[in-house]
Every structure is written in structure tokens, then in C-alpha cells.
Amino acid sequence: MTLGELARRLECPVEGDSGIEIHRVAKIESAGPGDVTFFAASKYAAALAATKASAVIAGADAAGAPCAVIRSASPYLTFAKALQVLSPERKPEPGVHKLAAIAADAVVDPSATVGAFAVIERGARVGARTVVHPHVVIGAESMIGPDCVLHAHVSIRERCVLGARVVVQNGAVIGSDGYGFAPRPDGSYEKIPQVGPVVIEDDVEIGANTTIDRPAIGETRIKSGVKIDNLVQIAHGVVVGRNSLLAAQVGIAGTTIIGDNVMFGGQSGASGHLTIGDRVKVAAKTGIIASIDAGVSMSGHPMMETSEWRRAHVVVRKLPEMRKQLKSLEERLAALEEKTK
Image (cartoon, rainbow, N blue to C red):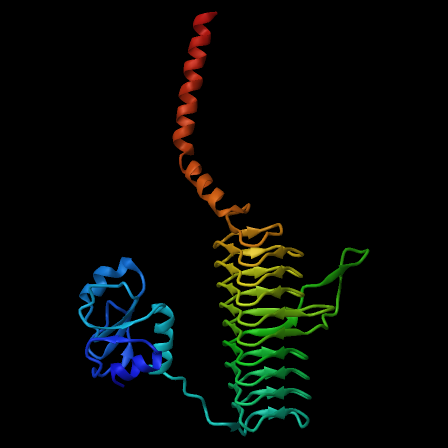
């Protein structure tokens, strides 16, 4: 593909030779002839000046590129679109593999793909153009919308609902039992049946080995546009708001409500029965133990506002020096007191 054709498909202007052949997208440090790279942060200015790429995707004010430039108001977003153009996903042919097990009353759209050893149980439905990879299990009466991709070893438990264009990475479990047990008088526990569904709205992506639990009553809901990383645990009855991001190893306890456009950093978590407002940002490893108003950034454990946490962290680093100073002052004070006796 020529650079001019790529720029046209990206709906961006190009500066330089638009006839250059472009074959792939590459990192700015390792790109060579035939590659297009991207520049989105000033700290990579030296790498930009030294790149061997044939072209670079860069912002309107970026300068110093030794090659052709595709100008973009959002270079990182344009980079993502360039990858889609130059490395298009190859979907398997429609049809049901002869080694798949499909219940007699399950409905699989003729344009869908079902791989070997996949299991689709009674009353389940699989939408148009959806790809069900090998060893996927779709439970009874579950509904899978159009244009979804379920990678190998995904489990969709009974009565769960997936909207359109949902991607579930390998080994994820949707609709596992919530963690609910009632104490008996003798100190043992009675399991509370977990019978509510998990509902995944449109354009959600769920990472590998993530688990999203079903509740005893009501539903667990992941709203449209949410992106969930690998190894995330979402407990029973949780609601995750639109376009929120949950990084790896996040844990959300039961019935917590998360607003829209919220960001949870890796290994952070929230206690149960909380409300997290819209646009909240939670730093990595932060423990959320109380509800948070909209638009607040939180860090640390115990949690505090990020600006306050930064000030406190500066003080913590100075504690050894402050301890020495305090000890010196105590010794001087003791000496003065001894003289006044």
C-alpha cells in the first residue's frame, strides 16, 4: 500500500512522497524502510530524529522527522487505525465444525463460526458473524450478539447476555457463581444460590482469565465501551459504567457501582457496596474503602486524594532525616534542662 493510500484511509494529510510503499507499523526505534511509525510524546524526540522509518504519524506541531509525515490531531488513535488497515484481522470461514456440540434447540446464525470442541447448550443463541473459537462453552439460554469474538476456553455460563461486538479473551469466565454464603449456627456456611445473569453491553473487551460473577438476585452489568484487562475479578451485582478502564489484577467487591469513564490502575481494588463517581481515576495498588465523588483522583492505602498522597509521600521519604533531627533536638533540650537545675 502506498503512503498516500494509507493517509487517505486514515483521513489525514501527508507531507512528503505519497508514493512510498508501506508494509507495516513498527516501533520508532526499530522501524526501517517500508515501515510507518508514530510520534506522540516529546520524550521520544531523539528517537524521531534518528528513525529509519519511511513515514511517521505525528501531531500538527511535531518537527524534526527525517521522513514523510502523516499529520494527525490524535497520533496514537491514528496509529491504532493504521494497524487495523495494515494488519487486518482474518476471520475464519462461517460454519459449525463437525466436532462442535450444539444442542438441538440452540440457534446459531448461519454467518457465525463455531470451532472444534465448542459446546453450545440448550436454548442458547449465537448472533450473526460471531466467532466461537475451539473449547468455548456457552451455557443454557445465554444470548450472544452479533460480531462477537469468544477466544479459546472462554466460558459463558447459563442465562448470560452479550451485546454486539464483544471480545472475550482466552480463559475468561462470564457468569461464575458470586461469593455468597450464609452462616449456620454451628459455624459452617450455607451456599446462597447465585441465579442472576451477567449482562455485557456492546463494544466491551474482556481480558484473559478475567472472571465476572453472577449475583443471587438482580444482575451484574458491564456497560458499553468498557475495556477490562487480564486477571480482573468483578464480583456479584457490580455495575461498571460506560467506557471505563480496568487494568490487570483489579478486584471489585460485590454490589459496588462504578460510574462512566472511570480508570482503575493495576492491582487496585474497591470494597463492596460502594459508589464510585464518573471520571474517577484510581492509581495502581490503591485500596478504595469508601465511596468517591465524581472527578476525583485517588492513590495509596489507606486511600487519599492523589495530590494529598504525593505531598504525604514526600514527607515519608524524609522521615529518617526528620527522626535524626528530632533526636538531636531532644538531646539539646535535655542538656539545657540539666543546666537549669
